[in-house]
Image (cartoon, rainbow, N blue to C red):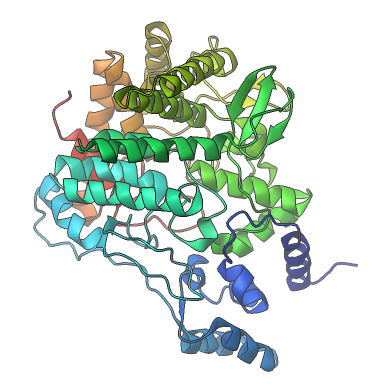
Length: 520
C-alpha cells in the first residue's frame, strides 16, 4: 500500500528525531513547537523554510502549543493566521533601493556596512536567536544573523574600509560563542548549534590590530578550545574508525571531516530534507546527518558530497575527508603555535607545530593527486581519492600547507579547468546545485587569490581578481545589487540551490572591496 505523502513525512521525521543527539543542549524550534512546527514546515505555510524558525513568539511557547493542540485540523490559511497571531514573523532584510545613477562600487559597499550592521542581541524565550554582546554584520536578505565563515570574508572589506571597530567586535562575538558553547555554530541560532562551519576564526584573528597581551592570550585560548572541539575523540581511534569530526585514516594519522551532532531534518530546510531522504532509499537518519554535515561544510550543496556526483540523495559528506577543512585545521594549528610562541609557552608551541607538520604530511599523502594536478577530497571508507578538481584545491595554498612545486601545479591546472570568463568556477560539474559550476563564490575567489599570491603565482591571482571584479561590477551596473553568488560562465546572477539568490551581500562586499586594494 502506498502511504499518503504527509503520513510518510511524519513517520520519517518523528522516528528519526528519537535518536538525535542533543549536542547543543538547547531546544530548537522543532523541539519547542513539535507538531505545530511539523505542520507549518511540511505544508509550506511560508515559502522559505527559514521564516518560521526565525519567528519570535508573542507569548509563552507552551501556551501557544497548547492552544494549537486544542484546535481541530486547520486549513493552510487558518494555520497561517494562527502563526501570525502568535509570532512576530520576520521579513527578509531588503537592501537599500538602488539609485538610477550608480555611485562607484567602492562607495556603494561603504554605504552598505551600516545597513548590514546589527546591534547586540538579547534572546527571547522560545525564539531561536542566540545572545550577541556586541554589534556585528549580517550577510543580508534571509540571513538575519551572524554566520561563521561568511564573517571572515566580510571582515576583509570592513578592514579595507577602516572599520576595525566592527572587526574587533565580531571577533569578540565569536569568542563569546566559543566560551558559551565550546565552538562557533554555523550561525547565531539555536538550530545551528549542532554544527559549526569551516574554521576561519584563526584567520579573523590575523585581521585584528589588537596588541594587548591579555587579548592575545585570551584569543589563543579560544583557538585552542575550537581546536579541541574539532579534534574531540581523536585518541584511541583505530584505522578506519571515525568519531564525530575525526577520522583515523591510518595508524597515528587522524584527519577531519564535516559532521553534525543531530540526525534529524534541518529546522530551516525541514521539508526539503525529508523529501531528499524519501528519494534516497537509505535510512533517513543517515541522509539527514549527511545533509547537515554538508551544511557545516558551507558548500550546501555540491557534487563534492554526492556518491554519484549528481544526485543530492546520494550525499555522503561524513564519508569524505575534505581538503578545505584539513587545510584550515593546519592553519589553525600553525596559528596556535605562533600564539603560544608569543606567550612563551614552549610546550604548546612544540605540540601544535608538530600537529601542523603531521597534518601537512597527511594532506600531501592522502589529498594530493599528481595525475589530476591538484588537491582532491578523500573517501575514507573506500580508501580512494575522489575524481574531480574543485576550487577547494586552493586551500593548502591559502594556509601555507603546500610547497612551491605543488602550488605551481595547482595554478597550471586552474588555468586549464577552473578559470571561467567571470572568475573562478566552484567545480567543473554541472548539477543544478549552487556550489557547482557555473556558479562562482566570493570566498573561493579570495582563498584562491590569497593563496596564489602567497606562492608567487601573481599572474593567475590577478586574472581571477580582474574577472571576478568585472562580474560584480557588471551586475551592480545592471541591477544595483551585490549578490550572494554569480554565474561566472556568463558573468551574471547565480542560481541553483534551496532558495533564491540573495541580495546584500556581506562576503561579496568584503571580497570585492579587499580585491580593490593593491596586492601586498
